[in-house]
Length: 259
Image (cartoon, rainbow, N blue to C red; front, top):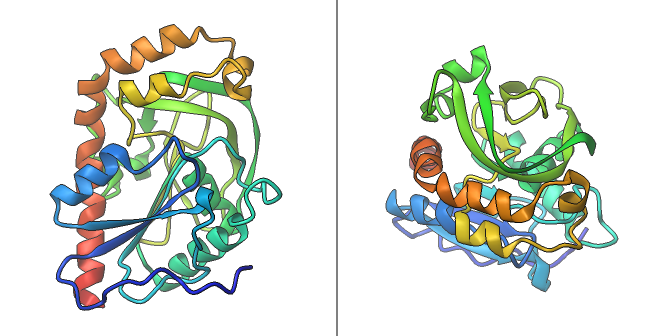
């Protein structure tokens, strides 16, 4: 675990601060960052992949965490030596009730940091898939805001081969589908993990296409078809997930007011 000082956060600022941990050069906050900014939230990015220090505890003045995606696995510490600190950071946030929204790898790290288990999944999801809310998801103040396109089917952009095989004790399953049981979950009242990528658009998804990518190779899916799916579904994807971002932003504002 690193002893480096955490990023400097201005606790006197008038805007709540969300600390985003960028684990991969290809996956910054993107749409999620824009949506949080629309809600008056400042997003500060730690570019862990460049060696910027990831704090092992939530710094003073931070009101939420946004751990992002990446091609590495949740326990690939040899490839990404900052992951130990990132897991500790997420465990600290859960203990202290600080809002978290983990996206894909970020959601897997949230689960692993709190006693869950992440492993290679039986199915690889790449492109646009449908996810469904559980009964608890329909009641949840954040996930209930996702907008379906028909019935309880909510479109989601996906790119993963690992999955959360076991949730932490006490975690609540909020979204699922037949290919991957854990699509969204909550720990406590304010920490959320998503297996999907609500932050990306068609252009970003297309930029990820690499014939050498293990997940893409394992999926057997034509990458051009997958990219076309995401591009064609952009409006539905934004309509589905922007309200989720807004509902989570409300938790960040609440934390900032109580801090």
